[in-house]
Length: 192
Image (cartoon, rainbow, N blue to C red; front, side, top):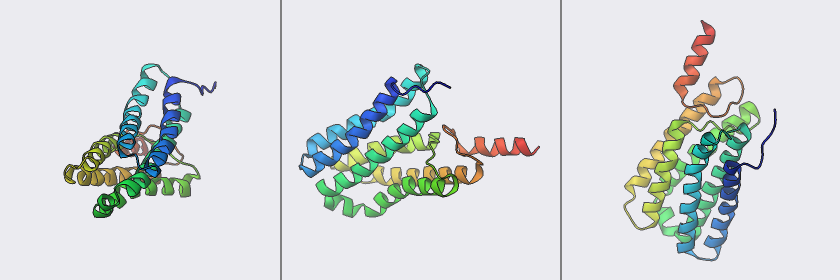
């Protein structure tokens, strides 16, 4: 099988990976406005790279894994950056930040233990949770109410649990699993 590395979706994923470190630099330099602009850019690129990959028929397993690494990098640097720029805000919402962070870390840890590699399921619930976290984070950072971020953290935790259950049910890592019910149906069909 031919490996296609330099596709538009992969370049967008690579750009998001770079933007993660730009977020860290901007936070270190105490540039909150630029941080927010780069954060919005990273979230927007995350929202469009998958549809572009499917539209151009350039969706690959390596692209899916690159997307997972870029997601992890952006969200990690986002938490560090928010800690540096808005420490009081993060301290106030530490329970929900921890819940959101755990929903990303625990599924990766379970996958590493079981498969010795990361997974990149990109379930519908994870996609929904990502949008919720992006919007909730932005509202919170811009001084809005905390409720959207708190709800997003709970949705994110549910998405993380779904990924853990998927990992526990699969025999090998797979990319782009749409939801837990599909994995359960597939297992039932094999046992018939």
